[in-house]
Image (tube, rainbow, N blue to C red; front, side):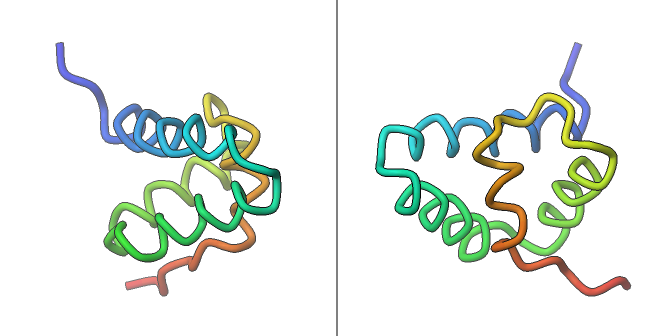
Length: 76
C-alpha cells in the first residue's frame, strides 16, 4: 500500500527536521525553512501548509516552529 500525499510530505519534512535538530536551534530553524523554500515546489509547500493549518499532526516540533519562515504559496 502506497503512502498518501500527506504522509509523504510529513515524512520528507520530518527527515529534514531530524537532520536539523542536530544543529543549534536557530541554525536548525533557518536550515529547515531555507531548504523547503529553496527546493520544494509550490505544490509541495501547499500540501505542507494544509497539514500545518489542520494542526500539524505527525510533524516534528521543529517543522511546526519553522512554519512562519516558510513561504506560503499563493492560492491558485
